[in-house]
Image 1: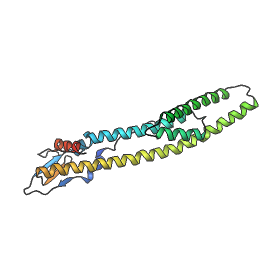
Image 2: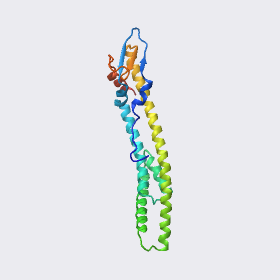
Image 3: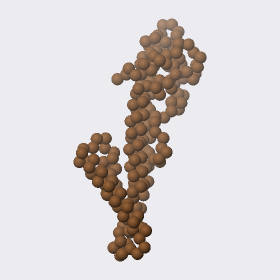
Image 4: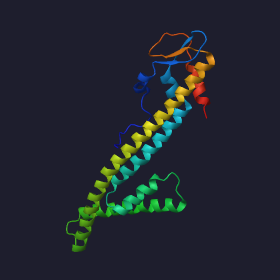
Length: 210
């Protein structure tokens, strides 16, 4: 996951192919049209899902950015930082622990940079410098592995949220189509100039779902 990682539910255009028209049972032929993209993107449910996805992505990006900035912490500290950062709800004790890990990491990073510029380090300082270099290499490896894990997690969540949203869109369209006695409801990309635009009714039905 990079700093430029894009968050948000996948564009509706990629999903439209499977929804050329929605068929219903009607006594007489009656046709409608709906802007599925608008129902999908403008619904309250989509906005909530996008916010959830944004928060998930930002939390993971924040972990990686911190490790990229302060690599002199231990693997154990990094692992605990990840565990605490990913918790949805932290107790005051857990928050204090997370704050201490970050403060210790920043202090270690400052000491590491100071040793790197020291002209004549003592044997003990040379040993400490080697320890910091070893930590930095370990943290770099962890960051790469976690970046892949986080990308997978965000991608999988995005797909789940997209599927959940599309299920709700289908349900809203069925509700509107059956209620209005429509034989077929076409998507707007198939019948852009069709009569009986049901977009607002479908969006209202989408937002009314519990």
